[in-house]
Image 1 (cartoon, helix red, strand yellow):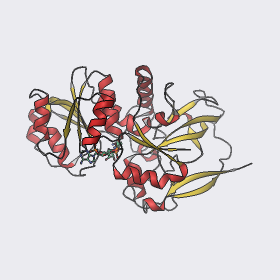
Image 2: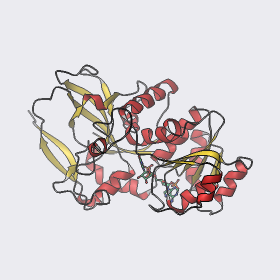
Image 3: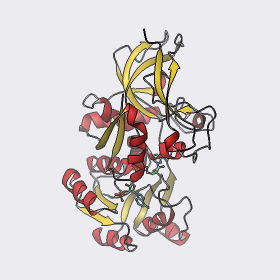
Image 4: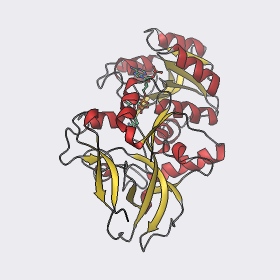
Length: 341
Ligand SMILES: NC(=O)c1ccc[n+]([C@@H]2O[C@H](COP(=O)([O-])OP(=O)(O)OC[C@H]3O[C@@H](n4cnc5c(N)ncnc54)[C@H](OP(=O)(O)O)[C@@H]3O)[C@@H](O)[C@H]2O)c1
């Protein structure tokens, strides 16, 4: 019997240092944990930061990489009541953020970074309370994309953005979070404007998602184009994944009472903008750092009800993890890049 598990570890010293190693099978399960056979792992921009030492520095010992997975429950601890062997699940990336607000204790249990082992391993012990049933219509690959990208978009568009039918929503780029943001907003009845730097991606997004309004964010005047599209009013909700100068421009593209979900830093970690615009237009800026397991479950059920199909760009086998990271880094993808186990 093989009692070793294969996994990929990162030491935070570069993508080329990702290494395949073996770990012992877990011993007896604790009362509230389950053993999951991992089937698919979804990559996020954060995994690049972790691997490059830009998310907590170098790790010694190296940690198991990645934070988003789907799989099948193999065994349950004696006090687990919400799951049974055979259930298909996805994970919340926080072990203990079950519901309500984030706090300094919950944030430390963010898997796949800051010294906490991740999920890129054949079998995984996880708290049952931090797992959610895979949407019935989704494959393992599709479901694994909800943990971070799907949930972050959900938090910005629905939980905190509270987008309403007929409102305008702005997303930047065609990466994992933004594509989910566009899909969720469309299902909620909002009108979507997407920015991208690629004509080819614009064409594909138009064809597949039916997004009519696409502008090029390399053109510094894009906020004026966005205001023109909205007949001068501006957008009501922004999924802001870029920060920096892009955030300053997003503010210029906003309507009165707009809600901006501040999510990412692809442009820059610092941003300089005119407070006068925020004040007079009464714009809310809300930092987003995923959401709780309860919200992940709400998202999963929303996807089921609306038959949402996540956009999967490319699947890589387990032994091609370095290539998968490099492909994500190249930003040639639309939506999500995955690793299959
Ligand atoms: N706070 C949170 O909870 C949270 C959760 C998830 C992600 N994030 C952050 O959100 C950001 C996006 O993450 P992701 O996983 O969706 O990334 P991703 O899939 O790697 O998305 C990359 C895409 O973003 C677009 N992009 C790159 N630079 C841009 C810029 N300066 N302005 C506008 N768009 C730009 C490009 O789209 P085009 O090729 O179409 O131009 C690029 O292909 C990252 O900073 C990540 O760390 C935060």
